[in-house]
Amino acid sequence: MTKLAATSLLILAVVLLINGVQSVKQSVKAPAPAPSDKFPGKKPRVGVKSGHSHVYKMFVFGDSFADNGNLPRWCSSPITRQWHYPYGASSLAANSLRPTGRFSDHLVQPDILATMLNMGRLEGPPACKMTLKNYCNAFGMNFAVGGSGVFEPFLPPLPHRLKLTTLAAQIDQFEKLLHDRVIGSWNLEDSIALVAISGNDYTRVANASSNEIFAFVKNVTTEIAANVKRLQDLGINKILVNNLHPLGCTPWQARPSNYTKCAGLPNVGSSVHNTDLLDKLGGMENVKIVDLNTAFSKIVGEQPPGSGSELAKRFKYTLRPCCESSDPDGFCGEWGEDEHDRLYTLCKDPSKHFYWDDVHPTQAGWQAVMDQLKVEIQEFLDVF
Ligand SMILES: *[C@@H]1O[C@H](CO)[C@@H](O)[C@H](O)[C@H]1NC(C)=O
Ligand SMILES: *[C@@H]1O[C@H](CO)[C@@H](O)[C@H](O)[C@H]1NC(C)=O
Ligand SMILES: *[C@@H]1O[C@H](CO)[C@@H](O)[C@H](O)[C@H]1NC(C)=O
Image (cartoon, rainbow, N blue to C red; front, side, top):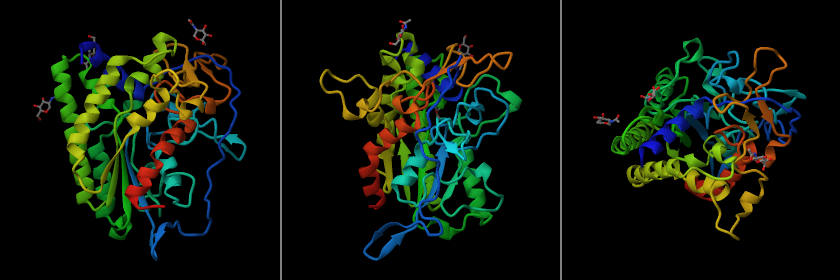
């Protein structure tokens, strides 16, 4: 990896947290149904097998790929944009647009995961921030916070002195709830965790040499493995750990080519990270790496002529985001001085785009990614 790669990785990281966008056309179709419980009044039963039924509890850790409302609902800024229009634009609850604090037009990865586990609901466990104190939802809890990494990210000053957490701090929070018996040990029977660490740490090595970056990748993956071990020690049964998606194929990286190609070097960075992660987690029992890299690449990566995957055909636009800031340093949902001054454009149909904003997939994008991983995840979790 070169210095350029470093910079790219870095910027990517910043973007994960701080996207930008600009002027607007606004009609957004709402293809997605509002989430609701599939089996109201019934216990979520999963994987009923030879008389034994699992009632999975899901605990979610990580960054904006998994966050469903843990950041504060402040006025619009790069890190709080997910609480403002057009975020959540595809969720029509009670006929009103309702941003839910997710970095997407509607649902994100843990929501799709919950559906594929037949958890009896159409979204993942609630954000810790949104639950009552001393109350653990029957489905589990989500501790993920947009912008987080395994180390404190290197960031421009955040609004309102907002402090981001780290993966370890999220697990501290989980451990405290265990200790206080808000989450009882019975909650950990048939428990699963999702760990979504998507590259924010690499903001720290923006200006580093390639050797330093390689060394730092090792630090990041070591830290991920240590946190996974800790979750096991705390009693989580099965753990899903995302690998790194192809960072060079994010709209933010593809923008200079008018969304016609991925940037090569950040993708090399992702591969190095993933090889290292496999090294460290490959031998751990009851841990599965969720290969986002392959699943994303089948859709957004360059396809050899004639091999265009069926999945890629679901999307008219694979690299061009639905919501695009006019300024590459701006963010989706950004407004100018007055109320008619929208600094972003919005597509008509988010389901035709793989990417929602400059780094995050649409709900349709997440669905297409998770559809590819469904069988192996269900096998790993013993769900059918
Ligand atoms: C990298 O260099 C740029 C320009 O000199 C500087 O603004 C930025 O803070 C540096 N980033 C890190 C992580 O040191
Ligand atoms: C990685 O970890 C080693 C050992 O803890 C430390 O000495 C080094 O400074 C770290 N490297 C970076 C780039 O953070
Ligand atoms: C970028 O691509 C779009 C859609 O293909 C096209 O309409 C637009 O003119 C292109 N912009 C530039 C600057 O080439």
